[in-house]
Length: 442
Image 1 (cartoon, helix red, strand yellow):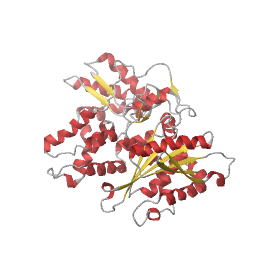
Image 2: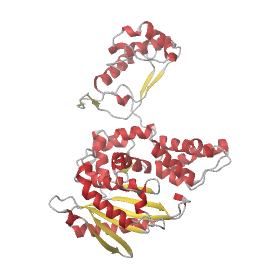
Image 3: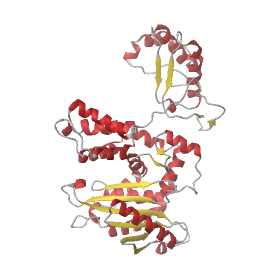
Image 4: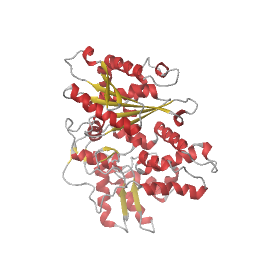
């Protein structure tokens, strides 16, 4: 699109070109200037239509600067002609953002450009009962049933986000060809496999979500969440509101990533280039003959990897504030991926990142057999070391108890430039109550 309307030689579909509006565009519309082309097309369309017309503009938030202003001016110019010589209603669909950005990124201030007539509406998430009712419509239509244990997981994974709820339903009932036989019930294992496939697919919605991470306002909020920091990072309240409107975070009861799938997708994407760039690390090196992860060996290898690569790799992250945590997650994902599963917990003001690894002990049964459960707590050293260790032991032990972990580890990253690596890298065995915790310095 140029300054307004269609570009003079836009590629239009045969179906559109054969329509009355398309015929008008070919006959007359190409001759009008871009600043009036859209207005005149909509005026003509309303004139040949026997009924009031409602038009939806999707992804209007992709327009910036003069292009967006031209669109809004042409719509506003036709408002007084409704409904005889202009559209009855026009809906602008996209991210709710009342600020117009020029091409250089500067915000144009001075009122709301979107305040044409009525109000801004945001499609909310489904409620838990609505999520279940929607999926049970499939059962009513086909007779195929779902295990009851799926629905709590579905809610945690999506928090009712409409696209995710529907995409997971399609993934598990249609894209899994073995489940097109409606006599076969959908099990929790089927659901978890579908969820992982959706995450790895980088479907359109998830790809657009990742693209949003590059925006400065999104960056400031997500950086604070990944780092667990609130005081050190200056984040505008308007940025929180914007990212909440995107559906990426929820702000009550605390600020956190809005659902489990997003919590998984965001760090995976931010560390993808690092994962594939980590050489000389193979999963088999860290798996014992009993098919357990040797966490002592794995975390010792990470200490050495961190020592050798931290400065070079963290410099490549867009999210440098959370660099050590992301580098650890990239290393773990490189080793665990394809065998086990990593669950992540992080949020504003927590000053830590919780990682929960589930590793299958029975290769044949995979993720649905007996599991080795490992908790790793990540903290940045701020303040006295012993105080941070004591605080971390409490947090690690509590988290390990809540998920039923077999072993627990606390990793403390020290960023002080005046200390040698010999001082930063160490290992200690500690206990908090009955819980043994291995503490690692990096």
